[in-house]
Length: 228
Ligand SMILES: [Ca+2]
Ligand SMILES: [Ca+2]
Image (cartoon, rainbow, N blue to C red; front, side):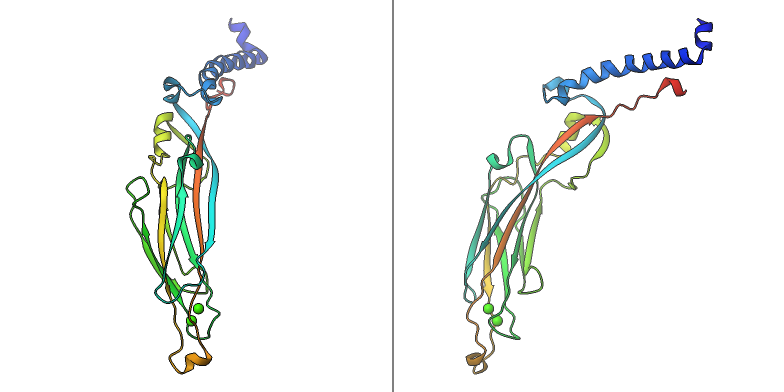
């Protein structure tokens, strides 16, 4: 046996065999999760995982049409369980409202908005915002559903169930999102308004929901015995 190990080539072969003896049982124990056979036992496997994300965005755009000063428009965005899918989570929902007041010069319009999330699942806080037309968005609101989501792959040593829980949206954000947009039309005082008049403003509205799926792959960081 000692002679066997004196040969450097035999040492390497033996080390390689040990390495595969270790890797294969681990690999096959994890195969069901790799191919998506997610039963309770497997889903709670612990170890070092490479966690990655597949992302999809749902976008809805609309224009409010011409609103007079103080007039309101209800913008609705429906985010359904069917759109999200069972294995995916909602990272965030954003509404952006922009306008371009080209009706008059020197009397820039603006707008304001207020959410009503009574038709949305989860404990989400209502928001409000306001701003001027031109120069980017008049206002925007973002609801972060899964804190810290950035879509970047990372490694973690944990149970699969812990990682899943970390990235869960807890079934919130589903339903009918509503933001009421109110026009703030500014025009030159009379009699300048005769020449420089402005009796309305329209607003572009963009809703974006970011939805993602988590994938976990085992990281096999077993020390190679041939290099020890
Ligand atoms: Ca104006
Ligand atoms: Ca206007």
